[in-house]
Structures are given as structure tokens and as C-alpha cells.
Length: 197
Ligand SMILES: [Zn+2]
Image (cartoon, rainbow, N blue to C red):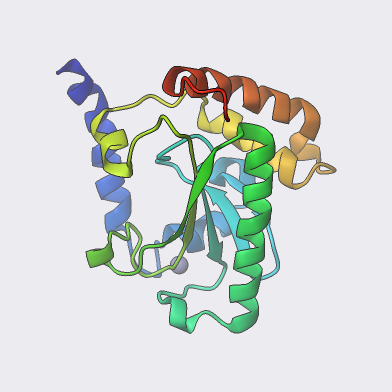
């Protein structure tokens, strides 16, 4: 039961953040204009869209791809932005495979509150690495699972992997990838007793 109490602040903050869902305080509008991508957890900026770490990840490396423009519906995303978002998701998946060696991915949108969107009015695509031994989304939350890698570490390895020549990733992509694998390895071993990962 103590785990429930430990987890309560997480849920409270999530509810508070999710309620800030208007154009003035939209997190997906605010983060890119913060002027500090490390604090914002933005691992990569494209032309019309960017890649950001989820502050409340379901698994290590849980990323989101979202347009800079405040757009609420998939149908309203301009075609070139749609294409860029999918390309960014593909790149993200390649980088996540390099770093975390996931066995699969959940990739997709929740559009509308009824469909489970936390931030309803700024559309975002989730890219969630998955492992054979992990559990479904809700049980992951219900089990109060602790992420073996901190968000700061996730940011460091992923931003370095996306933009290896940036000074942000001074550790270098290769070292970052090794660190990421190490961090993920303990979870993968704990969760999955097969050798096929
Ligand atoms: Zn917005």
C-alpha cells in the first residue's frame, strides 16, 4: 500500500498538467518556446514538428511526435507535416531500437478526451517501446512501476542519438547508446527470460 502513497504525487501532477489544456498554457506550445530543450525534454526539432520525451512515460524511451502548430485533430494536420511526423516517428523508432533494443512498439494517436488523450487540443503521436515481458499500459501504471532510467538520462541518450553532432549530446551517440542499453538491460532481463530480444 505504501506504493500507492509514493505514486500519488505523480497522479496529482498529471491531472493538473492535463487540465492545462488550452492554447495559452498548452504544454506542446509552451515547451518549444521555453528556450531550453533539455528542460523541455525536446530531443529533436524538425521543420514543422518535434520529438519530445513523455514526462510520464509508460516505458523507458516513451517519445511523442507533435507539430509546432496548435492543431487538435489528425484531419487538420497539413499533408507535409503529416509526412514529417511519420518520418520523425520512423527515425525515433530506429534510434530507440539502437539504444533500448525493444521487441516492439506501440505507435499512435489518442484523439479526444473520450479516447484517452491527456492533452486534448494539441495532437501528438506516441512512440512507446515495448518488451515481451512488460505489461499493458494500464497495468504498468497500476503496478507503480519504477523506471530504471531517469528522464534526464533518457534525454541525454536520445538527444545524442538524434543529433550526434550537437553539443547537447557531448557524451557521443555511441557511448549514449551503450549507457541506454545498460539501463534497459536490467529491465529486459528481469521481465523477459527468453533470449530473443
Ligand atoms: Zn498547443
